[in-house]
Length: 323
Image (cartoon, rainbow, N blue to C red; front, side, top):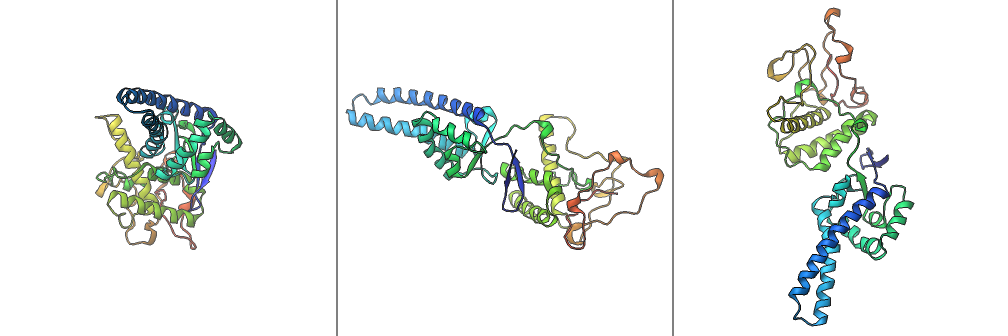
C-alpha cells in the first residue's frame, strides 16, 4: 500500500501497479498499436506508390510517430489514464497526488516511452520499475505520475459512513453528471479516512471538498448542513442512483435503515433530530435520554466519529450519530 500525501495533508491509500501487470498492459497496448500501424502502412504503401523514395520514407516516419507515439498519448489524455491494456488489467495512470492526468503528463510519458520501451525493447523500463519503490518507470518519474490498481477487493475497500437520516433523499434532484471521477475519489477517500485526520485538517478538507462539489453540481451547500454530512449525503445519493440503474424497477438501495421505522415531517425519520439551522457548524445538541424500555439496540446505532465531536478549541462538522 502506498500513501500519497495531498496538499491538505491527507494520506491517500493507492495500490501501485507492479511490473507483471504493467508489462501485460503495455504488451496489449503494443499489440493493438502495431496492428494499427501495419494496417496504416499497407494503406500508405498502396496509396503512395507513385511518389519518390524520399516522400515515402517521410510518410512512413510520420505514420510511425502518429500511431505508435501520438496514439497512446491521445488515448491516455482522453481516457484520463486508461489505455486499452490498462483497462483490461484494471490499471490507471494518476498524478502523484492521486488526481487524473492531463495532456502534459501523457506527453512526457509517451515521449520518454519511445526510448525506454520502443527503442530498448522495454529493458530500461523494466529496470527502472524494479528499482523504484512504487514500480515507476522513467516516464512516470519525469511526468510526476503513478500507475495504480483500480480493482481493489471488496473486503479491503474503506467503509464510507452513511449520512444523517434527515439528509437521506434530500439531494435526489441534484445534477451529478458534471462531477469528475477524480473528485468522487477524493470525497470517498476523505469519508473513509476522516476519523484518522487532525480535527482542524478534517474540517478544512470537508469545507474545500464540499465547495468543489457544489461548484460542479451548480447548487450551493444548504445552510445549516455540515460539510462532512453534505459529502456523505451526496455520495449516498450517487450510490442510490447507481443501484436503481443496476436493479431497474427495484427499490432504492441507498437509504439508511432507521430503527423503529416511521417518518417525520420534511422527510426526516421519526426519532431523529432535524438539522440545527443557524448554529455554527450545524451541530445539533443531543436529545433528552430515552426511557430504558425504548432505548435502541446498540448494534443498530452508528459509531461516533471522533474527528467530528465538537470541543472548545476546534469547529464541529456536525457529523454525529443521533441519540
